[in-house]
Length: 215
Image (cartoon, rainbow, N blue to C red; front, top):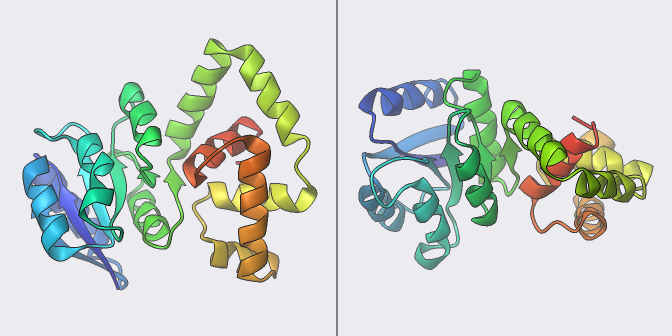
């Protein structure tokens, strides 16, 4: 069972998120917080698998909470609840090792996928957020985007398959099941992908996968 706390200053959002997650049999909401202070307290007390954090909640906000998770415990993964216009927050979240970016107004199943991915060491990037990031990169830095495509062309066929599934939020074990490979082999492929793409985590690799048109 994946345990989750939900932190958002809007009681209606918290209730909606809980209602969505309560429809699953493998996810349990074990606590709610209206601000970052309460979120940190619950994370320390309950050590949930996932902390769903509103990016704009009262201080400390979701990004600040995510950035301090390692000082509290090494169990809880951060998933940021965001809206489509939170572009600057997404940039900061990528640097804070946030494991998921579901949109508040998106398909409810997106939230479930994000929680499941984060709880098992994976990552989930909303397709709309990914498209926004890719478009922004293309507009801001064409040379860098071209270089990314060149690097992507050096991926093996198997690495491209792994990267595509990784970008969909699948864990190493799930990718292995899809490709009929051992989990250890997938770990090796993921490490190689990170090295070739000059990325350090699954979210960054997922962004590149969108740039390469694999998703």
